Image 1: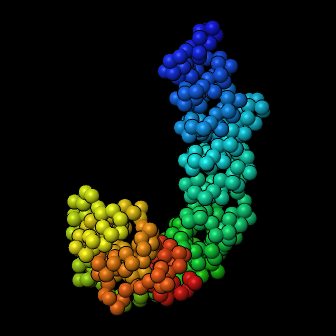
Image 2: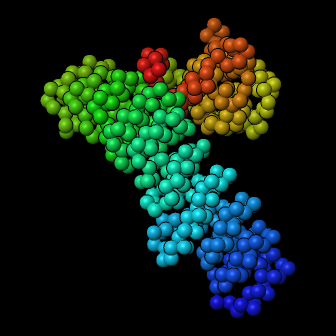
Length: 425
């Protein structure tokens, strides 16, 4: 332990670097560390926040610090302590730790709340009110870890969250839970079949072999599954399928998946025979010329897009680039403004879907006039097929456009259009 008098002298030193180094030492008296928790220099307070020797009373002060960097350092330290809350030797230290966690879990900065959520995701000893608040956070990076893993959330509470029109990504997180009974799965599917992010949520549920899905719920999924390619593989690989379900799947999954389906150990002879008959009736699955042309076009676009250094900024500049057929620059600008990956933007613009391209423009924050230009320019949509403005604005609702983007982001041919879409409505 450093000499107390020396520590006091160093704590009062005019050089911030001297005080910072002292703040990071583990052999300093608690009262000195508490004193430094109110230092005028953020770097000194950050050192105290990260110091495991800092008394919890000082952490309580730092949890309300004005500097986000200080609070983030504290969150990381407290996050390391959180899994061991039940092992705290002294009750009052544990209570102070929980109080610090409660303050940080309500922090105005999302990344600090995220650190706390990640640290509490598996613990059974966290404050229930903190877990409940984090589960309903407006940021999925905060709510997601809790929704996916927290053992403190009951099925009843999760069902309530599911039915409350939660933030995008919440349904997917719940679908990945390691313990997921039939009531929870039923509620999730009922909501997902009409939610903008429902495709990915059901995909995650089907991939989760710890999820118990009621036969009636599976039948509901199978009713619309033909239009959702992302579901076909997970459906074929579900651990429990009746012969009737397998035969329904055989009617629409790919020939490759038929091969997987007929090899299931739980497939009875009658079902295997039906699958073999279906397989024999299928033509060979070969890439068509149009598909090959699209692949070639996208490959060429990959190379061209890599050469864009300064994409146009602002709608006028983007419209000028469209008029000049500078499509690589347009794609780069849309990717930047929408926050979507460039391959996703390329795929949407090559989809020949007026709705998908309109949703992409909406995601980028563009006017409907620019959405029309994107459809006709890089989208290559004929004039009579363009989606036009309605009352000067977008003709689709926000939820419809979220849906279109979800389909574009989902793997495979996620929803083969009108029939499946109407079935989900």
